[in-house]
Amino acid sequence: MINKLNNKNTETVNIIFAVFQKSYAIEAKLIGALNFPPLARNAEDIKKSETTFYGFTENECLAAVIEVNINNECIDICSLTVDPSYFKKGIASKLINHVLTMGDISLARVETAVANTPAINLYKKHGFVEFKRWTPSHGIEKLAMSVIT
Image 1 (cartoon, one colour):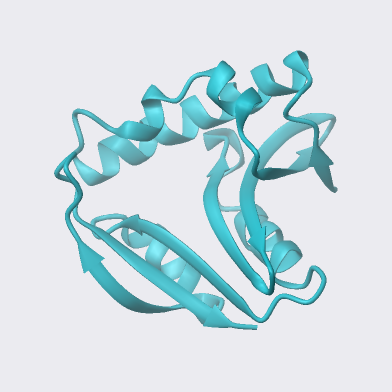
Image 2: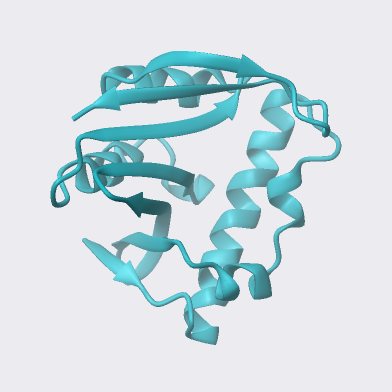
């Protein structure tokens, strides 16, 4: 089940934070990053965020979170994390489909590490195509992808 999450509620924020930490620890290892910026994000950062969070719940547990920013007809996927105990169940695809079919969205964008092949393949499966590559100051090469919805 997918629901909007209240990131102003401390208990909810702590659960989101736990999913982020578990998922991003796996991603950091996958891409070989010793200093992975998403792992530095704390619960207070999540609570202060003006983005929108949706969660996929299974057996009353938060299994995955997608964080988005909607601006006019464009949706930016800011983060998509799945608790490792729920990997390979199609949950990330369900969350992507959910946000791509919300309202009057005509364009969706996402950024990820160039070395994050599983994420890139997931987004390609949903029609996303690469449009930009760069290396930010933290040194992890990134790419941006988009899809017209």
